[in-house]
Amino acid sequence: MAVPIPEDDEPASKRPRTEDALEPEMSWLAKHSGNITVQVSLPQAPERSEWRLDGRVLSFPVTLSSTVADLKNNLQRATNMPIAKQKLHYEGLFFKDTNSLAYYNVSPGAVIQLQVKERGGRKK
Image (tube, rainbow, N blue to C red; front, side, top):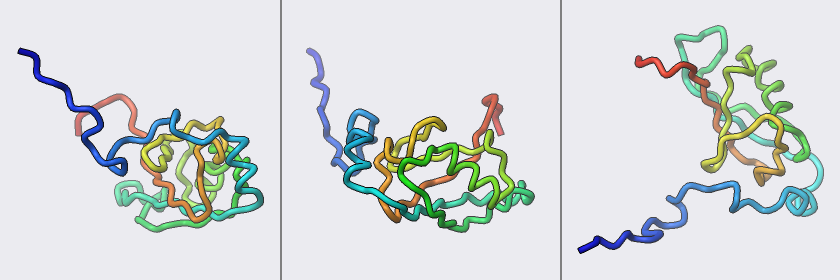
């Protein structure tokens, strides 16, 4: 006898968000035009003191048409963390450098999480 697989047994807030659930970029830009301020939450990484990752939350004025790469450039200037080591995510979605902030439906005052990009899969 087969065991039934539960469908959507998690509340909406617990389900991971997918790019399919996003509002189209042009529609988001039409609703939210002009400059906004986003916040980026830095991780704590005392072993990388040169990157100044101390758990702070930084604010950046941006336009929604700005790319993720633009935001990463701002982060590099503020923290000295190389762009290649930055991994940004918001509401369960990891950002790709070529997409705009509007693509990810970033809203004014959004808190974007910064993580250190790990390479190679070595065990710690």
